[in-house]
Image (cartoon, rainbow, N blue to C red; front, side, top):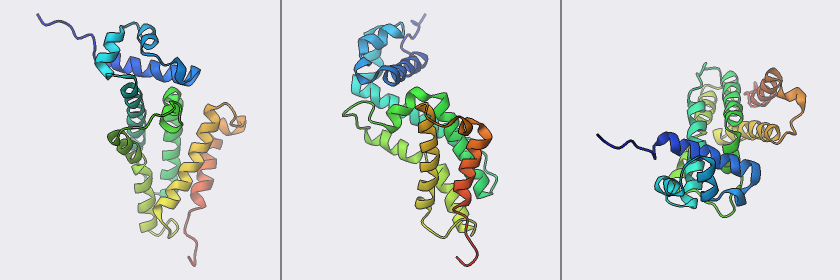
Length: 200
């Protein structure tokens, strides 16, 4: 009878979530492999077996954050109406951040000094905003969104939702904007600002 696998995907994810929680709550100095193993109820041998080293653990944490993020954005159903679709994507962005706030810091800040994702991880991170770019490109091509570089429009929309979400995670977003309808209205105002005007 084969021996049961103890270093499985469930343990890997548990370790990653706990690593993210430590980083988010206490900073990079709290992330030791020994403490992580103890907190997750496993051994340091298991941590090394799954990740190899602390830098590889942080890279895996970065990848996992963007994997979940990409999955949620890709799951957004498109209506074909650019403003509505941009709002939907923005709401999915917010939902992803609120579902995994402990991953957000390693994804978008220098939570671990000196950390640089490897090329594969960096490529994954860049690709997560593809649904946003695809939506904008379709809107520009259809003559609905302004006749400008899609990357400019996408960047503006991303900056708005990222800013709102960062304030919310930091506990400084005004209470009125935490209301889902108000949050959506803020996203909609940004998106409608990119509509093509007559004479453009």
